[in-house]
Length: 207
Image (cartoon, rainbow, N blue to C red; front, side):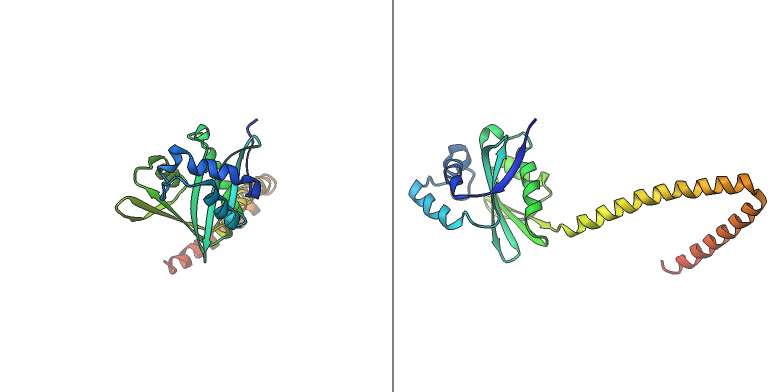
């Protein structure tokens, strides 16, 4: 069984970040495509790896990639890298969904992508980012991240299920009423119907 997880980046992940950053295929799509020395990387990593929005991807416990979320005020700048062997398998998208559960609500996510980086463009579009700005060689994507609305939708879904069940209960009550006392049940149902019409007429005044 495939096991996909993300974990908070630690100092032990330095080599992974370095290898993915300097990978020839990856590097040509980074905004800064220069090859960097390990000493340069080490200084940068030790300064940044404790960032609360840095996570490492795990596939069956093997480290395969990372996501960097550099937080400036309420804006999080996203950078993702994954081992080439694990691309086009929806793994990065699954890791991104796990990442979204970790970050704070009411954030704006920003991703800058080279126009030639078709795979990254598709990735951000598939994960509901929208195009914010076009420059000569760079596309800027954004996404409003808000976990609160998901709670409301979940509650609405639960209410809908309960109401659906309650409607069945009402129909069962009607069956019992019309079976046991059809004349009395018919009179009560007529009153209910008339009240519903009155409510509908009053509701039209709100349109």
